[in-house]
Length: 71
Image (cartoon, rainbow, N blue to C red):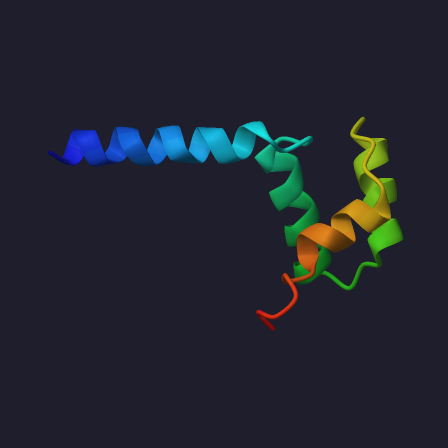
């Protein structure tokens, strides 16, 4: 029974993650750096570019900002 729930959760999660343009690891790294350290969005953008990942600062802002109506 536990395996069935785990596989259904994984398949649902895979469907959601498939729509993302960037890998989840990249998204979480950007959000973690922005929240944990006193960095601007443009600093995060530059740091990711130095690592070969080209992401715009406005995209990072969308990842960090909570959806409207939830804050």
